[in-house]
Length: 113
Image 1 (spheres, rainbow, N blue to C red):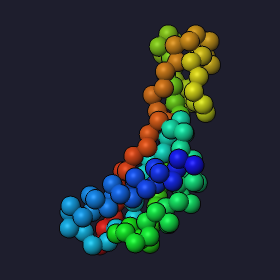
Image 2: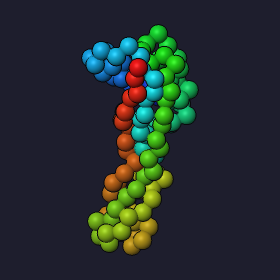
Image 3: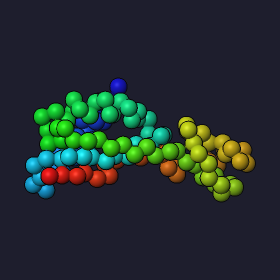
Image 4: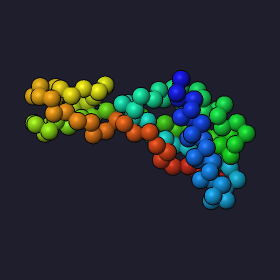
């Protein structure tokens, strides 16, 4: 479960940023997880409480924005949803489909006291 390591990194990055700003407590953290990122949002949610224990993020709310996968075809120019990686365009069947959204894994914002 690589989500445990990812969640630890999220907590460490958020805590480091909070300390640099002189903050004593983080009340919420908003992150984005793309459908094509390979990260399971529910596993991050599960690990967050344990990873944040004893940090400035203890008892903070974790808000996860799930970003759907999208691709754009270089040949026909149309966009389509992507539930998994593929190169074939569902519209023109060429192999020019490239990912334009859904690989995100980032901290968006934090609320602090």
